[in-house]
Length: 85
Image 1: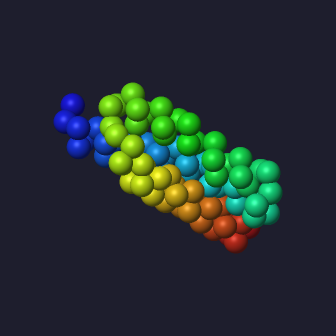
Image 2: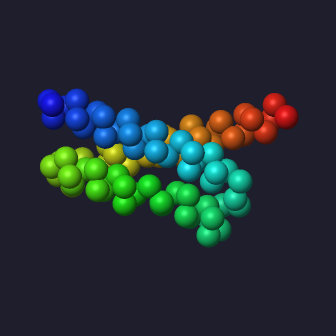
């Protein structure tokens, strides 16, 4: 598989993995244990995928950005669901 496609797949997976965690994170007050747990639980998975794929540490900001995007989208989905009833 082409390295660019592989890395784009890892970025997409980082975002998708974080969707449910962002959704669940929204139920906790900021900076509590549960909030920190859901923010950080996916990091070892993403690191494992990046290392096993052979990508350097220089690409961490891109995978981190994808993870944050997933967290934000999941949180917005939770807020939208709550506002609809």
